[in-house]
Image (cartoon, rainbow, N blue to C red; front, top):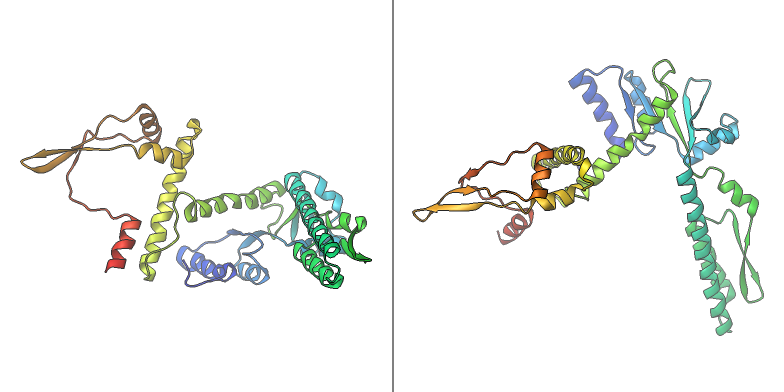
Length: 327
């Protein structure tokens, strides 16, 4: 947990220091995406004797292509590798699914611009006093916003706007669709090409964990506490809840049921209060339904026959927020 709007790269140094001072780590490898591990962070990692696995940006890939270190046909292989003179290894691959997504996005952008120009041309025909230069400027602004100006040219013919597609430039813009390059300083003897690739792809599990904790089942935000220790405690509870959710996902894999669906089924569990002398003595737990019993058995949970009366009041987040407003 970091205060304020701390950027990701600024958090790396403190984690390196923590590993060195608190845990005495040695021979570790940091795995981070291109937004986390930049040149300064990579230098700090190497200064402490650690290693890294990260990815490089598209402009960096294009620079390596211009230098001749990377050939485009290498991306057609399952997993390829090249090494520069400094011993830095680059693992190359093209994701065909992502390549098709990029191509579809490019087509959608072109159709968006074409529809916009069609509307502008209709307006120019219906309004003789309108200015063609103004309409052209708006079309160019949209073209820049869509980031297709490098292969699309907007031209004026009379009082109409036309598009010209530079097929050569379009093909050049699409040559790296779906391509990504992973960078590491690990020696081949320490880590194989496939292992480097797989460890970087494992970041998808990290992203899934953050997404689950922040916005899906657990909803870490909004945070209704202000003090730093309580904020950290809140995050810790969410992280522990995620560990439970992950374990339940593993145990419920045979049910083809999502975590939230399983929780919704178990939310039907209830207790019956037993009163003696006008006071609640205990709470009896009725037999669960067949579906709830299956989920409980898979999770290794055995329900007790009854629960003692503890007189503990549990405030939900919604009730807690309303109570603080009243105070």
